Image 1 (cartoon, rainbow, N blue to C red):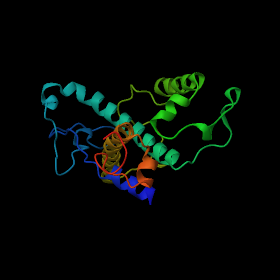
Image 2 (cartoon, rainbow, N blue to C red; image 1 turned 135 degrees about the vertical axis):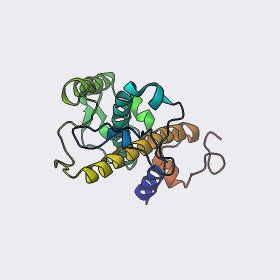
Image 3 (cartoon, rainbow, N blue to C red; image 1 turned 45 degrees about the vertical axis):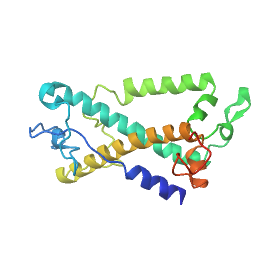
Length: 207
């Protein structure tokens, strides 16, 4: 039940992004400028950047895509950890610290030893520079869709749209989760277990 509620909350976030009537096809035979324009908002460019700074669109789309992917992984990780699904063994044998000792929620980050955080940062740097370089704006690293290439442009566009929109929902979802933790003083698991869905009146949170 908790997982179902979490999925519904994340999926309910509105998704939107800039688009354009221009055509700029990539090697995937899909127009990058037409991806992400979702009803009912459609083209969403309140600052007019598509017109005034068209040369920056490719990088901004790449940043949006990468942040969306990171946020989707963060949402899944938050749901898994909040359900107390953790690795066996020690995260730091020298500190006698087990994975199960790390608190759920955002505060768990501050329980990871400094050396562990340094390893995470170093790994992310390696990924950014060598494996999945940030300079590759199209976001296609040859991995495919679960190992398979999608050859139909219409199906590819549909799945790329789904990735962008799910990424946007995840960015709002993980940010909302972190804010709710700080406002209520409860993790996602604790909020659901207590039926605490309104931080203003139904529990002993910040409000």
